[in-house]
Image 1 (cartoon, one colour):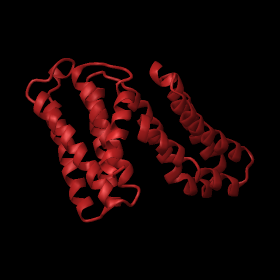
Image 2 (image 1 turned 60 degrees about the horizontal axis):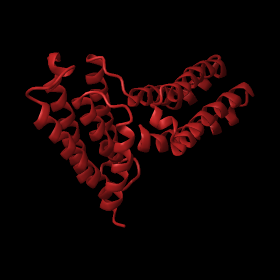
Image 3 (image 1 turned 45 degrees about the vertical axis):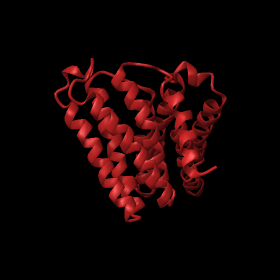
Image 4 (image 1 turned 30 degrees about the horizontal axis):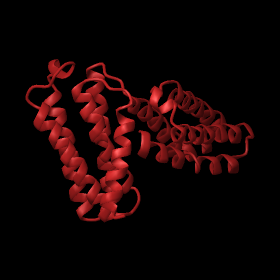
Length: 237
């Protein structure tokens, strides 16, 4: 099976997941467009230029379709959003920049660029009182990045173990919400439940390492937090 065929199959599977909780035409379309976006985000973090290029091309096409269909006259609840058109254009600009970076094989830069698209989409929904499961995944991701990026510095600072334990407590809360806020279709999905269990275990293991007051164990546990989330994000994020 070629990568394009694999990509189509993966996106098709994710579309089913993304539509687990139907909302309005714009949100549904955005959720469909989020599937290839997640693939592009994943591939730019996987050192695969060709696959990243194919994924960003798909993401740009699906987003362009949204802009064409809804840009001028969006339906409710986005019809009163004065920033709707500029947000659509903002995502397009992010994709254009990321595509250019991918073409130069600057995948790390492209990955960082693509992160901004997630923020723009989330802000669009927030302004219009729309909540989807991706928002809970994004909240977990933001706290996870804080824990991972600042973990070593926090440990080295005053009361390092205690400070990182507090941050991990917030991560544990958000991991629990990934279960309680899951759409019913997800809750019945064995693969989803297995991936969620892996995410929650990674947080529980970090918490246990912190409680042991052993910095070596804490650092080892920190190194095992991101992968379970990434696997869950690409399929259900």
